[in-house]
Length: 369
Image (cartoon, rainbow, N blue to C red; front, side, top):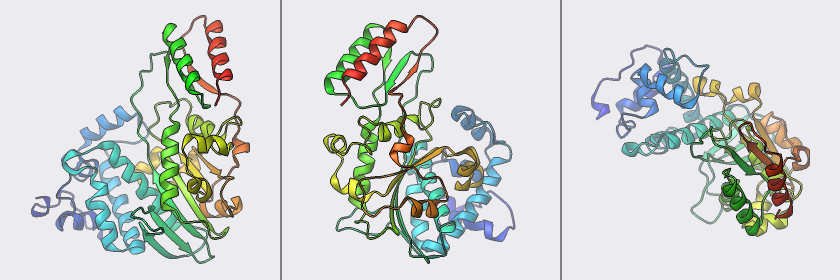
């Protein structure tokens, strides 16, 4: 057991010893040896060199990263325990942050880390002094809870649900197309068959991820009680395999004028998104975490990269974009403001694609849902 061994890092920094205490009381006992946090505590520079290379992280020095990560994480843990209570945060680190324990899953770890960043941000940088914070509050008559509720002195109430989709690795050498408006069943079949015939990979858009996340949030949130009550669905799109397009895919699926999920309620319902979700989600917050977040455990680096979109849900009741802006300090948009006329993303090597492109575009245009 790690708790029966000496904590590897030696320092006398006081407040930064929270992880040392976690080590000593057994919270990290079940963590895998390959866990990101254990490798950081044990100052495994070679591990981070390989991980940063694999994940394309270029701006962080792996030599100094482990110590800095542990120090900054300890500070944030101490801060969140002050807000949510020691027991709640210790349970979070014993279970969720362990990311599968002996069956360690790196993606689950980054999912937990994303949740940790956002909770720390809203606990410390809301629209007014924070009066109350509850981790996994029971808001509806079920066993489903959002991540947190924050109540601020100016009357703002934030209920937040956080999701992190995982994406398969992509072959960057393949020719492929991904439509970003919804197609009929016949349209999907026709486009796929045509692409197969000309040796192009057809990737269908990940709209079912958005549908599931919206329904999960709808099941966990309660009805919006006033314009000061904000139900925020945050989706961390950082691991997308379409790095060239950043947030183009989810933004277009939500905001395209023909069948965007936040533009056409009939389409959203037909896809299987519940009325509760459409009524209760105030806004969808899409973002990609900058590398500075990883080093300093600070969500505010998003202000520098601006790799985010906060999209107001027009179907929700009592939603005020100005209130959402005051809460997040970030730009807030209606779906119409993010309208993009492109209905697909293409990645082809050089060649004569004109006629093939025309046919693919024609199939998509004729078979939009």
